[in-house]
Length: 351
Ligand SMILES: NC(=O)c1ccc[n+]([C@@H]2O[C@H](COP(=O)([O-])OP(=O)(O)OC[C@H]3O[C@@H](n4cnc5c(N)ncnc54)[C@H](O)[C@@H]3O)[C@@H](O)[C@H]2O)c1
Image 1 (cartoon, rainbow, N blue to C red):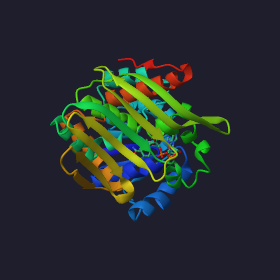
Image 2: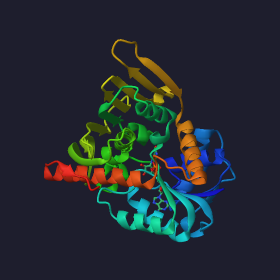
Image 3: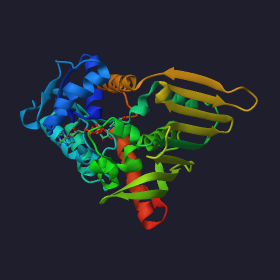
């Protein structure tokens, strides 16, 4: 198999490594020659021990076109859809677009969905936690009725963006990239949209349908001339009437990421504890000791698993939590959440 990764930054290196570990030939493309050099000389060797000479490094003008089984878009969110459209035009077996799929103004989203459908190209959106082993086990147990009927869902992705900036030592601060701008797809709701995507994945899994309305509260902050939500609180309702909440922020350290689901017979928690190299499920039912299940993992494992999942889904055609429709649904809630903040009212999410 052959893959082309657009964007040689943090995620581009993670996914290059993950694809190479699955014997996929990789070309890495970036508009910035310094980013290509940094990938080869700094990021990849520092993370994985040594550069891999089999990886091609290209500026866009000299990058090979077409004939790729997979194209990955690993650039800032405001460039995802224009680059994904180019990949569709060039022709590719499948596309993996990083999260969030686009910006909260949803520019170009409808046209992209139509183009992907008419080309018949399978598109995935890179919500890595959606395919963690612990997430799959958590979903399976909820569906088996481990805590009875599900009454409410809470998710959170609370992580100070110091961790993200530490992976980008060349950035002076969040305002120097999309991270500091919610309009460009950064801020808490865009950058940490794993939390919202997980909320939607769990609601769907327990038959509660799609999010139909959102009331959002945000702590908006300005750095220089860009604004970001440093805390986003979402109060969510689904088409079946399930209510719950999702919290995302860029201020919490140590980080706190996961889900808590309350059912008629107990409570189940899912924790992503990357600093302890593990994920955990805790199942509590009244009258018995909590059951704790540990899933060892590292960040490198996370991306290896995501790539294995995507390659398997391409081969088998099996549905995936990373499918385009789910990434689009997450964008619609993000857009509605910003509208809710601007208008000060609960906002409907289009079906
Ligand atoms: N799934 C995950 O867990 C995860 C983790 C990290 C980042 N991400 C996502 O990946 C995306 C990129 O984040 P990052 O941290 O790697 O950013 P980054 O700044 O480290 O890297 C982005 C790279 O894209 C390049 N670029 C920008 N425009 C380009 C273009 N038009 N053509 C080619 N290259 C271009 C930049 O020069 C830069 O090198 C974001 O959407 C982010 O949310 C996802």
